[in-house]
Length: 151
Image (tube, rainbow, N blue to C red; front, side):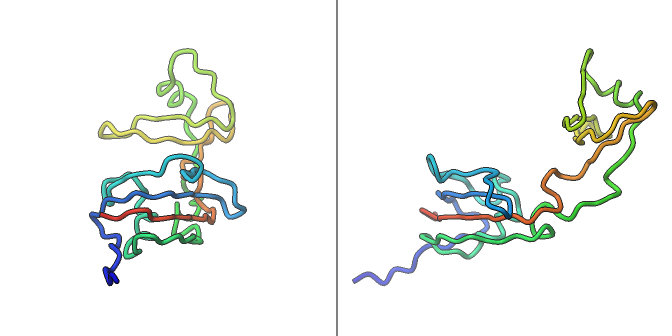
């Protein structure tokens, strides 16, 4: 009879797992349950940090669902991140001939060479309104995980 304790998830563990991220009403955002499991290394950026936090300390073989409030997931919506941008700025950051529609995700150059993106919410004559919140900000989510192996 074996009394071996199952391996547990640490900050640097390698995992094989099935996982599912879904809206509060159960609509899948991403899932591996219908196909091959994922293999990943904790702390490498393959999962969002808030999802890794849920996994820490779980033993191999665990099948669990976490209910995540907006503050535990992609954060609350921040009204200050809904901003007007001049049409000139949009044109400077657009590919020639770009035909944006309300709801499109538009990528912008950031100071220092980075990039950021916003969802186009409204066209005005001289300006357009973008929402720079994460698209899932303000939403409660479900995170389901089945840990197959932990190394």
